[in-house]
Length: 301
Image 1 (tube, helix red, strand yellow):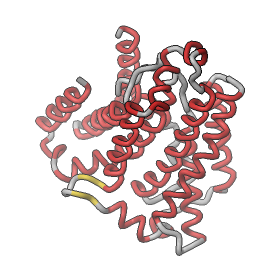
Image 2 (cartoon, one colour; image 1 turned 180 degrees about the vertical axis):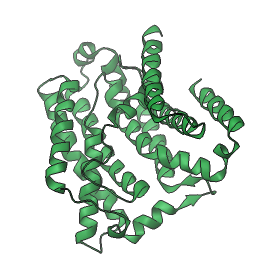
Image 3 (cartoon, one colour; image 1 turned 120 degrees about the horizontal axis):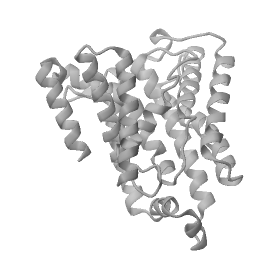
């Protein structure tokens, strides 16, 4: 159903503005969606387990700045090394969140709101108002960012598709993936039947942190510049994509590919509004309205 809504949205916008579905327009859509989409996949297991991770956007900013700093200080640093360092930075944040939520059983909303501010503050302190641009990034990263397949599919979004397929397979066919649905549906019952709730919850936050760290690399590839405010306040865009993608905040329902479609739909609407000349304020208002509508539909269903 969500996929058909996406098709209708693209169709209506292209009817009004034909340039929206040109090769460059489609490529821009995938490019602008990649960061939010990969993060939506990352928090999918957490939301399915009836938790939330609000620290992801700050983790993206910290990861992106530290990687850019490494690239500046070590000219031999490559894009593939960035894809190793980024997730490791995110894992550190995920471990803290996992210990506090899974180990101490603190509310995920409060914990990750706290780590959101801690990580962002750390980013400001470490960066010391220094920013980086494409000149400080390795040439391999700039070339990778410019690579596209079939003229419309950027390298970043190809990675999103591969990641989405692997995550969907894991959640559907692996026991540890199915356990997360059971935990989200009824946490006390899952504990009683022997499902390792602590381990599943802890690893889900570590996974979310790792993906957010990798999204920092995506951010650098997309914008080719970074400062302490990178991806500031965008955690709710990811949450909106997840909820609109059919993942229930009540737990136990949802898929990674639904999260990606939700991210595509949100970004398509944003670009469509821009193509139609709608003011930026209304874009934010419509984003909020979409989130509320998705929540109402979730509760009704």
